[in-house]
Length: 345
Image 1 (cartoon, rainbow, N blue to C red):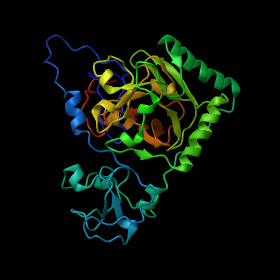
Image 2: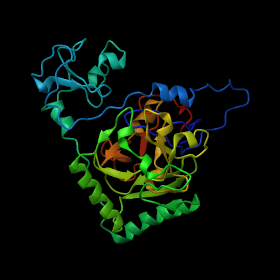
Image 3: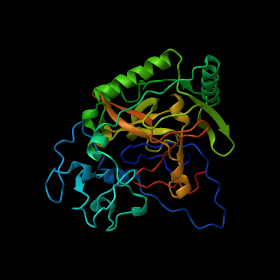
Image 4: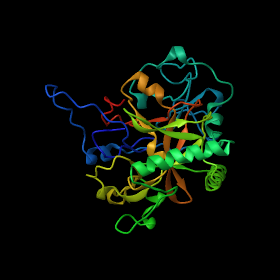
């Protein structure tokens, strides 16, 4: 990905990273659009949805009742509930995928009405039951060596060291600075069950049972990641790793692979992950051109920030079933749409 700025944006997952190269602009083309400064973006990056463990007390914002939970829609931005018959205009079908309430969407009409259908069971229960799945490594040892070899080649080409965890170096942010309680917008808390999944994945990687992915080189996109086997929705792909530093130290850094780790109430406490010298396979997963429908269709994973035992961590998670040979992409802009991805490949 190759955005024109290296400042972080806030979204449900908050992060940024460059991979593909944008084509050069002709000399006679109009001047490039000016984008907001880091200070302006940070001032507006005020929310991140915290998904609770228990939604049993959820009530409709319109009628105040918690009855008929199977008809309660959950807004993916404010996380508030609305009965399908209470929201205006009435939602006649349960939406597929994400849904924003009228206030958060700023629209009076329910979008994509033709593509909506009813689901069995309560959306509240479905949201509550979403759990991370461990990746399934390739069974063939030779294929695993091929996968690890592709990662080693990519890291060598970029003069990077392999690191499967966050690293803290003198002159950068200390580990004591990584405190989830400082988060201003909010982040998801990793459940006990998901922590067990994470630990299982770490144990597999330590044994050399890596996720089934290959890193390939593309003349347009550079190094990119392909699935070397089928991946199920909600599968844990990798943790985004690298050196942890303060955002204030990296405001004008040209590093092409930063990811927001902590957005604190005090901006001087905010942290980023810098995967320019150390990192893992997450370093090579590409962003998408979210200014086009075709670009948005490519998205098959997302970066999610989690509070794990009091510390901030960033995980890449599959958002739908991924087929063998399919390349991995996540939405660079998320909800903010602040960064120029018009020329992304």
